[in-house]
Image (cartoon, rainbow, N blue to C red; front, side, top):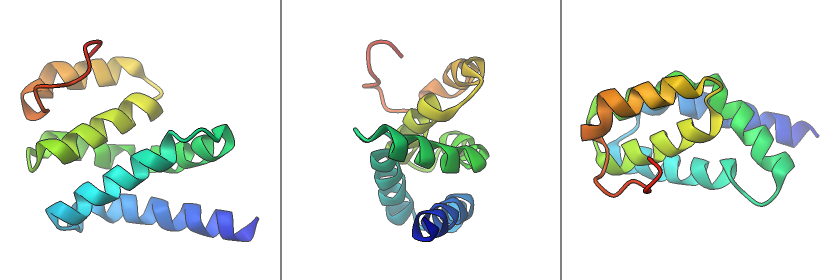
Length: 108
């Protein structure tokens, strides 16, 4: 049990510090985080989503930064999974659609 808690804490710390990562590293980190947050293992997914929620503001910042559309897309997808107030994600899409790739899923 201790390694899982330690890993969760480290993941949360990296997420919060993510704004200091270089573009390619930040993109890869968000890609990996996405893979952890939506696996087939529901317990693992929920644990990872709980960690992501601790730094949800960094995902909003990633989208609004305009640094890279690919990273913004991963951040947006993560927000859709973990945000507890779906209206915020809807508002994000209204305000920042131009900062996301053209090819979002049809339901977006």
